Image (cartoon, helix red, strand yellow):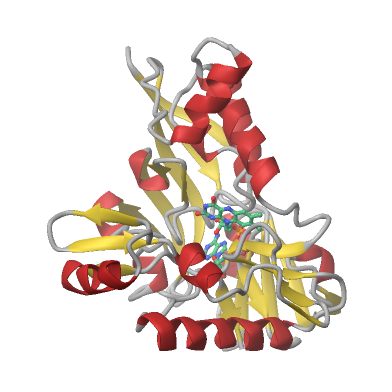
Length: 332
Ligand SMILES: Cc1cc2nc3c(=O)[nH]c(=O)nc-3n(C[C@H](O)[C@H](O)[C@H](O)COP(=O)(O)OP(=O)(O)OC[C@H]3O[C@@H](n4cnc5c(N)ncnc54)[C@H](O)[C@@H]3O)c2cc1C
């Protein structure tokens, strides 16, 4: 257990904040020894989906439980069990090297494997739930290791039980993923096709991964250079009756239908319409190319970034009547 540790290098917003207590765990037994955790505690993975609005006055438990094991194999698939402290992108790279398909579209998403189920990470037409089998997690009240299957996790768009009923209840220690030995490629996202065509590389899980890496590096700011947490807000899902009214006023508004009654709108488009892209107040700002990404240009305070996020939320609500929900976990 260490005291008064800086968190600047341990999260991607790069804020100058510290935690009262910090400890790193590499095994399930080490987690169990820490129980009961103090009321103020935070499980930390790669710190790529959190905004500290001030110093953390509790215990940060840094999950570094590692390991990748092959659990089952049949003609067509493999089942792997991965430590929650593994780095997500390194797992993707490992799978591509083994010839296991399923994760290539999720290349270069920052963070840890253990955090991936929390918001059911997704990108370029694929979500974690598409390859998810089950997970193991330590119940932080009982200390017992529980297995949660697909249904128990209640995955949704950037959502799961871990953001709702089970919020704060578990430390996810191992994630089981079912991957395919015979790749079925998902290149429905237009930009992937364009990059593949331009590079004239044959279709493979490796070429898809390379295309995704190329697109992401061009599109998204690198947290090592400019602090950020990726998309700050979720894309709102709204009733089609509301969409129809908005479309009358804003015919160019992008709309992605979901089933019969609802559609997803592009939060970045809504924010952009209000002229926020490239806005900067001190060192807190909205990225110049991505209206959905809030950034720390160097010495911003978390409270300043949160104040800016709330200003954006209020302006979108006033103009479009839509409340944007943060995707990033706000530590107030
Ligand atoms: C540049 C950039 C691009 C991004 N692009 C995408 C994208 O395309 N798609 C996408 O879905 N996300 C994206 N993200 C968000 C982020 O990468 C994911 O949410 C990722 O899963 C966070 O992992 P982490 O280990 O960094 O989590 P952290 O930020 O450390 O934690 C996030 C939350 O999960 C909890 N948590 C972490 N680990 C555990 C655990 N083992 N058990 C229980 N709770 C835990 C934390 O307490 C916290 O509430 C992006 C972020 C950045 C910075």
